[in-house]
Length: 206
Ligand SMILES: O=C(O)[C@H](O)COP(=O)(O)O
Image 1 (cartoon, rainbow, N blue to C red):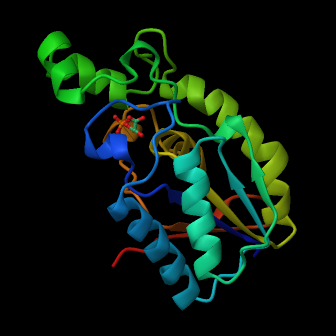
Image 2 (image 1 turned 90 degrees about the horizontal axis):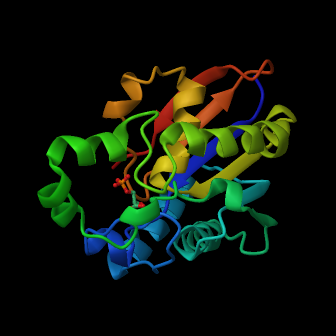
């Protein structure tokens, strides 16, 4: 057995609440989002997890989520690395549009393909495959070595940057990832083997 990898999607953002495509735009958390992030920290604390290092994106909703979790764990001073590689998928021309308005304009099916398919990018934006092409190398070079040294690593990021990571860790196909959703503020805890395969996966739900 090697180390522990904890993935957390940020708490609800202002734009999640308003049902807007967000991508690389930078809205803050709602009250509910702040609570979800604190709750993620409490759940991790209750299970005795003690991160040795934290990673997050350059977007504030993920950074604030990371801060709440570390505070709940009593580790506000822990080293946190912020990198654009962990940003949300770039939603391109859809950024800032209402998701229901987009369905009216382009149809339910097309919008679902843009949101959940593996390799169809939204106009001017990234497909999940494109997102994975920056998230996965960053994970392999920067994050995984810590886990393989037996450390506990916290990653506070985004729905689609984490879907890309989970797809690779769980060995999901392009068809399987379509159905995969990641809830806000719910920690996903992986234990990895020394050969970097997954030993166990647990979702810390209520
Ligand atoms: O960028 C966004 O709009 C959200 O964070 C994720 O959106 P999705 O669930 O539509 O992919």
